[in-house]
Length: 293
Length: 318
Image (cartoon, rainbow over the protein chains, first blue to last red):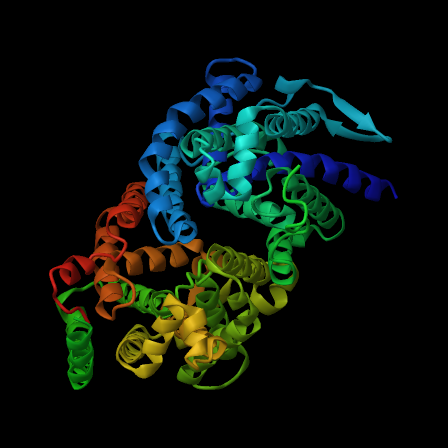
């Protein structure tokens, strides 16, 4: 019973954090119908950003959150301009973006490796508070609560953006009916650029917590993170950013329960879930009926 | 000019048979002579492995449009099945290699439902499947059967020369199949389905069966390659035959040369693997940077690969 409670609460925290891991990928797909296969590599870059800030500059790793947003603008805006419009004019943007971002991912992995070396880097455990917070008698390190908190904040902000701002309305219009949105005079390019930058920023922010949740960050984590993010997004439902939380929770609970009871098989969880969901319900658990908040 | 092109195709048929035979003869000659000119036979062996993988991937991606990101899953299954057959039966090695190919095709049958998915979903689900195979094979709980993380040893049948020639045979089979796909009605049907599945189905083509055959043939080729590769290196860890790099290299090599053609993957794999062995083995990051950039440039500017440069000039590429 103790074990079960630990696995369930841990799974929920873990799952909420992994929602943040998948969120950016889902946003990009929802708005632009492109698949950012370099998502995991951007997360790893975020991890290294946090490591640099904490290890080299001696600052709190949470400073990497505003810096991630800044970097996302600096990298994301020109990257968007360079590749996305060109992709969207091609006849199969989904597949071509898949291959293209795979190439970008490979380049990013190589660059990370050349800049930081192949070593695993971890962050000081007490940087986000040294204690551990309990719930129902189960204790988890403060960093896990921080990760879950930041993830929920990001979700809430995204929800506010979608439901309270003009640009958010426009974004939802583009998501549900792209051609009609163009016809009604919505500035699709502007909406897409913002979504692209936001997607990269979310990946970078998620990266700051990867050293805590996964123990360390290293350049070769990228591909695994991309597949995990993809699994979460597909379980939730591709193209519906707020639905990512369903995928995150299913993934988090599944992983934690497996780790508790059959630990040697726990790394199969995201892949098995992905395969099962994709074969049984390709539209994801939420399906098309609840497209958006 | 629709008429002239169709007559060209009809008259091209016997030519294509001749071209295929010439190609296979040239390949045989090159790889029979290569080990005598170049001392590092294992490098040539690896180049052949990658040509086979790129060609096998081309059979699926080039002709049906399904990009198998988990292609290495078939390769690894072939390697493991072959090694397990060598360890537990007294069959001759060649039969074990054939068994490896069949095992990969069997995995292909099990994963057949993946073909219901389209585009990126298929690719990522296939990747997930290959990761599951890897985790199952390398799981310490199954160490008694698969050797778990410690891998397998079949050094009792180690024979670099025989495995080299066996890989050459697999290479010829793969290229022969690609030539068949390129010139036969079956290959034409596949390309029709790739362009417009609905119209192709209305024209009376069995879409599911055609795709499934291409998928299984592609799996079989990777399984055979995996089996011979295992025989050639004879001691391996699960990471060595299930590393995502095999999928990645096969995709990059095939795309670089040009998919949907017979010589594209051969050219792509040979050129890029030689580049890789020149700069990649000591500092793989630089090579990774280069091929990552290559993919980006190919998708943006040259989706048809290197050979499309010739095709644009009106040269008919086989």
